[in-house]
Image (cartoon, rainbow, N blue to C red; front, side, top):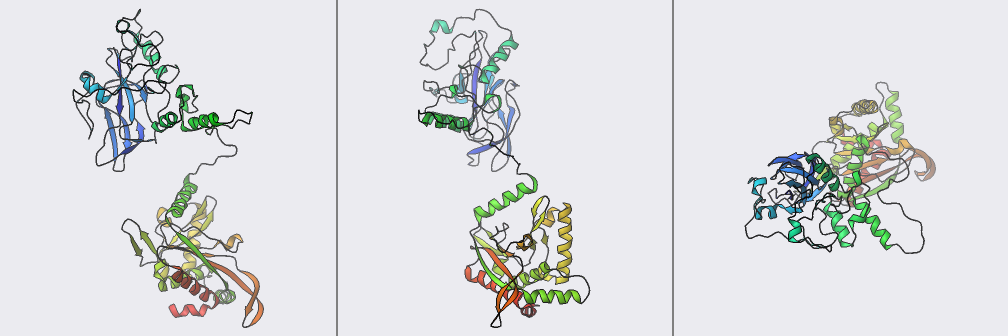
Length: 487
């Protein structure tokens, strides 16, 4: 007679308490040999192939790829003991699931090996007894279903239905069934087609959620692949049970796709989403800003370009001001190592700048910006911008920045509170430069005004340092001759 044994996720050692399923190596209905690897899991330490200590037919898998399971949670069930490995005994019935510990204490050594992983054994002390599952519809969610012609299973725990008598338990089947038919019927039962078979649910969390709220999983229709019951199905059933009896619009299941266009977060967009989300989670940022009169800076740039030679961009002049300000306030050219609980001040300034492309926002990095002239910075900004628009930036062009300059004024806006480019400590934002009324030399005049904002990591400095940095940048914008002191 075949018995269905439950194989649980073993202790993988080194204090690990859970593992993520990376790839299943077997499917329901496959025949497995003793100690054959059945699943590849990833822990915080390494990738591990987990061997199954039983040989037989896989009748159920508990967990889809990407699911994280705790140690001791069911991995799969295997029907063992039948000569044809068809998943049922000679009488057309399958045994109830048994755990690895129960198998070891009841003499199942013929279908299992002695090879073990850390903290897991295929055999158990002889005095150890199998845990009795409580009766009820939720008591045996991993039990294999009997075939339509099956006699009652002798090893099944008592349920509210009449339990088989000892005589009935040993009555031979009226007619033998061919192995392929028995195998097919057994697999269908595992998939949840029969109400008396195992519930089509693989997540321990879903089973626990249903148990805590008194839901019978056998009464739910799963919305997952092959009728798999998902957490959303259970939550929908909970809401339906709590809804008032009065007629009301029925809400769609949480698993139903929402209206509207769905755009996958992949490629550049996905990388940006991950990085900005991490920045918001980890960095306690703050922002300060100031309006500055950029009239003299614009005049100085016009004079430089009128003198001949390569054109100097406004972004290059602002970058030169940034590197001078970072030399005076090195706290903002740093990163935070939370594991070591240290602030790491960086000796070089690798200046990132935001560039909008058809593929989304990217931040190319100008290496050693602190040692470049305005002319060299202009040429490097132009080169990286063109490469970004062509979509041929390399990973080296996009990594290693220590400070970011964000000129959002090109979008026609005055101010912003940007998100810091993790793991950097600060970002300078520059708005549009527009004519505005301004008090100049004691008189009201129309001047070229720009708003400057600094978003900084409050772990690396306080407002005084951030304010001092921003004030120096504003002074250089208003009076470019101040910059000559640092050249």
